[in-house]
Image (cartoon, rainbow, N blue to C red; front, side, top):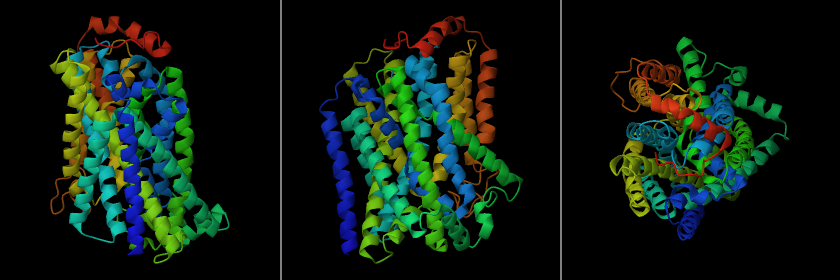
Length: 530
């Protein structure tokens, strides 16, 4: 009972802290520039911490630790993919997107294309990617709280998911980008501190010898040396090897197309600060993914992994309990509660960023620029953002409840695949191809989006296996769990076909201006109202 009281106090403290930050930030939020981009007032370090806070989600902390604990070397490939992806974001997207946009991804497309259709397409893609990502965070929240309260009741998990949905709607509607950013900064600091503590305690068990740790993990896993070599999860047959390539493509290319990451490049004063933000984020995220190596193999070495559920989502909190003294000990209870509270803060921060991004896209791109033809007042636009946040939160809650059997990192990898298929091809071709036009953008976004979501629907993720979303039915004809290998090339192909099937002189004429703006930042402070 004492453990549960401690856990409850820590949880409520995290929630109270984030609510307090949000309410305080709301007092200095006025107008769309504040609400969507925090008034472009954050320093590179602050924005780098916030990017890290946005990116190091429940998938990173709970999902990757679980996959490494269960699959060894193959699980660590998630960490590598998530980190390498930042080089694509840094080298190809961060600076040019900051220079050529204003609030959302669609601003960059609308600069030289017909604004109504491309804004509608970009908003659709943003909402779909965000909802996929939101599912993972909600599932993590339900799993965590059920563990801490010691209940297996599905009803309790569902109530927790509903509560997280209500909180994320509150963060967005009250705090906007300023409140969300400060919540993400606090969460990044908490997560790094908590993870570092567990890493030190794990390594201390093995005299700070990584080789000893890996050997113990291999022995305890029951799989021997195979646990430390490629092929345990993604090498059994050709299909699993292709699935690995598909996963790698989705992870490496997906980050540069994630809407809630792209919107962060608009919250700093200059393009140079956008680059510096990414460098800070890479340092922070790189350190964290090295931590996941120790956390995952530490869980494999110190826990009886046969007692973990198939998703492995509880490996990190169970490891914290083990290094604190084990189940029933005061130290174990304190560390379990601490790490679970940090993981919960992680979930709250990420869902806030995702909801703000998708709601801003609905309000700014669809309501203001499509429905009201750019004539909506700032107050009207912010009101619609708040309403959209409520709607998106409700959809995420309803979809998360049946998705609780899936691994969190796996769910996020699906979001990466959709982002890499629909958003990245469009952004890249718009920046680097003069001929690219409105039809190409629409073909690329809708083609990539529909192919990614369609292939997921007809994959073993949804039907055909015991861990599928829909059990007892089998309509899976696509063999891969992650669609990236097929849907990402299709996104580029559809964009090329659409572009070559139509000429749009106006788009080509404005390319030079977009190119100058993207590369130099000249004129980037002007509102893009075209």
